[in-house]
Image (tube, rainbow, N blue to C red; front, side):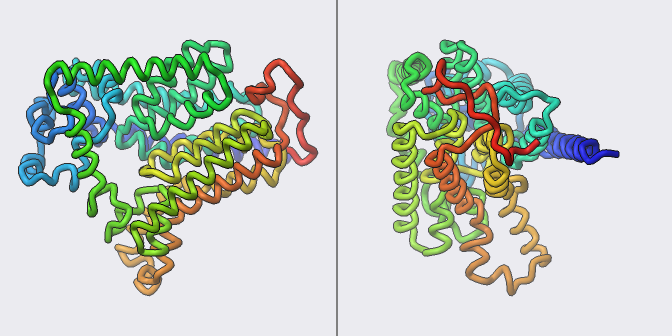
Length: 453
């Protein structure tokens, strides 16, 4: 058997293995854990909004609890003590546009709404890698395309996001659909898709909106901003007319969610904080100072954003996909993000495996993304808890500072790499993707002599 056939066979095995892992850790887990997931709270809150009730009140959460889903006793207990947000992260501080977008689901009984949500999310996430192949002009017969599919379906954040039914997965998929629609000349559709994505998860889709604004693609950006604004006004008007002091309630809800000791606290004493991937986790683990860690993360994020804006202005990037990849990674660094939000890494994964022209570029980018092929901190914490990792190792300062926080500092490294490639103007394989500024101009650069087959 020739080396080419062996290579094809190996890639085929990888695709099948990653697909099996994806199904087991994503859709199957999503169905099995349907009684309690990340969709439950926004479903209830969107129902409260539709009824003109404060969606950020714990008492509203209890009163609107779906009859088809048994409510654990601790929900009432924690709500009475005022610690439901602190201990359980609910009701969630989703902005009003998120609840407006999700409100059609609240018109359905919980069992039907959840089944529909599961079906929509699975379909969206499964289609996203194939849509990226179309964006990059790649054929399924290309080994690089097959390798990308294997890597994309192996991304652990996608598994976790699907398994928990988190809206971030649909926001990421809609972002991919936005770029495809824009590249296909369907700018109105792209604007609407982007608006829905931003409403669902502004911290996930906001980077793409910024990209279209910076690149002056006004039709897409304008429609997205206008639609988001209209949805926001609709959300606020509904509660204002009903006389609900929703804004004060929202800020109080957010304060409790981010309070010391909460699930969102990057300085918690236990390992739960390593489920977060924002840079505060790394800086706090290293310096043990909450204020300094927060400021350092914001400084690094601002420096990266400034560099990205300058490079976009200089138009050094070889393609829009590289620019989108960079801003997607940068958006994960300075503010609160959980592990599943790293599903945005599907952008640099696609750029590196499908478009990057040099093997060295592919190798370093994929190596930086590789830690996210497994839920590293959760796995390492469990191994330490069960004694499979010696206590002498797990009790060392570098275990928390470097090892368990590796995803946070790895994102910083990946951002540096992508900004470097933008500055260098990395060569790319011939493809359908060109920078927004290059539309209608020169053809894409020929593949580098070191390009992968």
